[in-house]
Length: 184
Ligand SMILES: Cc1cc2nc3c(=O)[nH]c(=O)nc-3n(C[C@H](O)[C@H](O)[C@H](O)COP(=O)(O)O)c2cc1C
Image (cartoon, rainbow, N blue to C red; front, side, top):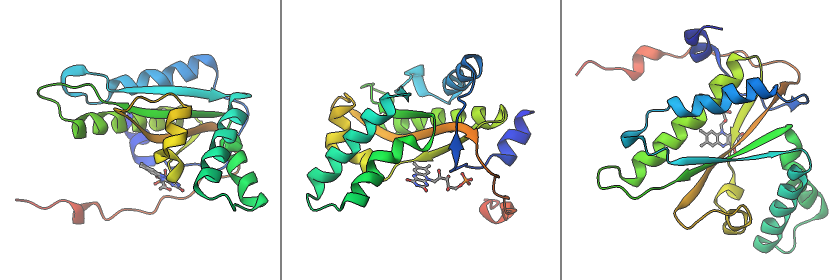
């Protein structure tokens, strides 16, 4: 797929299944993060690769966080939390990892980490795999952050679910591009 097709046609895929992209394709996805625009080349990101049984461990962490927030959670809500990471064979925990720098404020570093994450969405799509960027309150939960080993300066900016497209992809509606651009 050429670059413009990937940029123009990508869409999120919520229903994902096995198999994972091959190791070579995964490497292509990971490498795509590194062409994100990145002031002073700080590489202010890191990614936790959660696959196989580690997804269950992440589900347990989500349950722990959910119960700490609301001890009266009903069993079906607990089960929903537990199963969240099982929605794809691979979950990348995308972390903005702030590096103090005299010229690069935190906002710029968060944006670079976001661009790196978006590049991985595109690289998955360009190779025929599905992906979806999710957050929800768990991304900002201190128990989840601690359980995943984040430092005080770090943020979870997304859980990137990646896998084989299960079912269709949605039709994109044509955006009114021009209305977002004004001559100044
Ligand atoms: C930072 C961020 C967090 C998101 N979190 C969620 C989420 O928790 N749940 C969800 O359904 N979509 C979430 N989305 C939106 C989807 O990833 C997706 O972009 C949206 O459904 C539009 O679909 P599209 O990517 O095909 O245009 C998030 C997007 C971003 C950029």
